[in-house]
Length: 317
Image 1 (cartoon, one colour):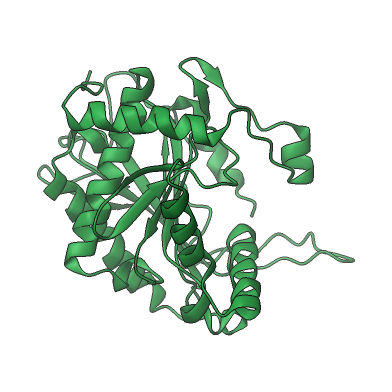
Image 2 (cartoon, helix red, strand yellow; image 1 turned 30 degrees about the horizontal axis):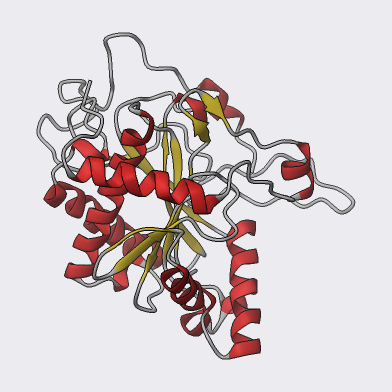
């Protein structure tokens, strides 16, 4: 996707935030608020693509939706500082928007995510996530779907259900669990603290979660972000990616049987001030190389989770 307009995105001016009440851009009173992205790469009514295609190259209109999900009117209250019922309200909003956008037949995939911290390119520090509705199934998700399909064809089982069973049996990579979700650093994660939050039940997407499951997901996400912050006693950068079933996608028929809702975290830190960079072999060859054993880093993250649960995590600035 190409969007030259996004080069115009501003860094937040000192002392001003368009997402704070009083800015004139958001309501003066809100809890969680859906805000149309000012610099979207996808639009419901896109302009015709540039006339640059030829040979093997094709273009298509950048049709879709880009929304910003404001977590709170507070400029500094990240997930761990928000009360659990507030985070549950956020999960409800994400589920509602997933369902609404998925009803558009031109949408093939709804992708909620959060970028947190300057290390992953955040220019607006007010706590927020985003939601993209794509006119195609993104490549990484498509590859994951095909791997899950192949595993199901070979075994008759869901790959993520099997992952849950193995991680719970092995135990050393599990960080925490509640009635509805398990958090672990999977066997194959490419980041030292690359946690997955995986539904225990075989569910495909946010709208399928019951009220209790949504509360459990909110509690799990809040505590994991708090554990990250407690790990090195600093605001911990991460990319949070919700992987759920595609919509309106005949090419992935049958996904109800073989695909499974989960949230993937890509945190770039391997120490308090040390970035785990993606190098040439990793980006250029897709040959990931983790710099630390996750059986060890999972233990560190469990300890940080317990500190956060005791109220000893990083405090709001």
